[in-house]
Amino acid sequence: MSLFLMILLLIFFGYSLALVLANNSEVAVNLLFSQAPTTNLGLVLILTTALGILIGVLLALLLFKVLQNKLELRKLRKEISTLESRLLESKTNLEVLGQELEQAKQKEQVVIPTDATIDVVKH
Image (cartoon, rainbow, N blue to C red):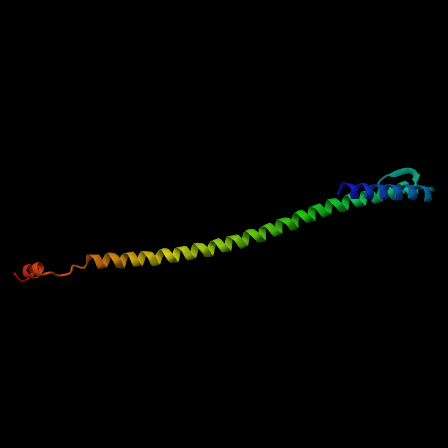
């Protein structure tokens, strides 16, 4: 990666040097609210290109962060819906188990009559 970056910087430097040498005329730069002194046209082109690249990189990083946040939000919403469905399933299972427990308790409370209890009931 660093070798690629070094080659890219070398190409950019060579292009900048050729741009300055090819465009050596002096130009006046009007900055709308102020006037810059006359400057080499190649230098103005390099500065504006560098400024454009810097602004582009900053905007790309900002856009990347926004997209990354959107993807994270989508992932978290999906996880929330999965957890909500699991919670609903657990509640349903708990209700079924509670009903089964109630039925088991009711079966235990039913007294099965024996001969001794029948005699007590008759008297």
